[in-house]
Length: 410
Image (tube, rainbow, N blue to C red; front, side, top):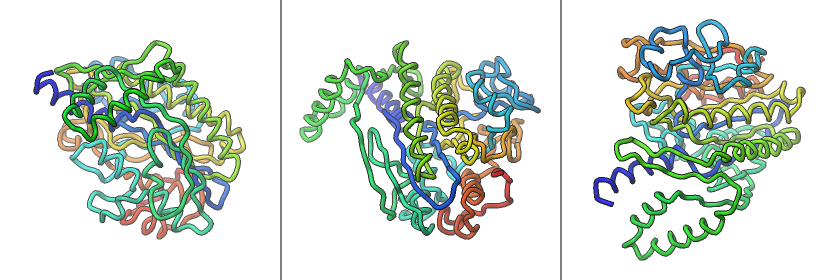
């Protein structure tokens, strides 16, 4: 491996490590009230312009001649959902799913997965004190709301999600987790640690443990690098999608069981949204997993609990308005928050739409962010649990101006 190829591969692995964690994880909490809040973190920067398509905006097709080859699944007015979301489109038409477009955190211009995800889960401004940026907004809610408690932190692959990090106590359980690395990632890891006596043996042990589980039915991911591509793309065996959906089914059943009990808030993450290359095919599998999660939660919770449920799916940042030369999109700013659940007003795209004309783009490249994802979460919690505005703006999301009520909660 020459120096040029090594550096390129190292940078690509760094991008993929943040965008595609090995496994997903979840946290649960209990608060007074009967509403259920499910927060889904979509790691990797989901392309909202592909998922909830502004097919009626002429700029969309002009900026994306390949990705806009078809309009998708019409859901009213100028909007269409990605063709891989027929089940979500059905919920949308029933008024049980919707979206906020041109939404983002206060994160601007750096476009790092690590920093963007941390800020999303901290729920703070970019210049907030470090102590606040180290706490998750759900943990601050547990500290501020009488009777609230962290019920369970369920982690696979790492400790609890940052969204529940902070002073409020919570119990933790980590089931068996597997480390899986593709052949190229193994070679890269060996090259990085070859001359380091401290980490070389630890890395070798980790690889050995990984290889012991090669016969395991879990999804195996390989990292394939194109020397001229900006990232590594995941490749899996043909049977892997079915195994991944089966894992979603098992998790949904587990989460629904807890939400039918004392649990009122669940937060989890789904990875695989970093679509720099061949997005038309790369985005299909994460969309299938997200749709499967929503539909299975709806089925497993049952009509009564689903009718009191609000699900928010949010990502650290959107992607560029223009497709790139590799048939993908790069890290951007404005994106989409998907909503679902019987407790929310669906069947529509909420919030203002900035348009996709050249003059309307942020920094000449991204969808202009007009709605703060923290305000969406804040108004949802106010509607579900009756939280005071001062509690949301002062304790849960310090420094946030909630703005006008979008009347999302029914």
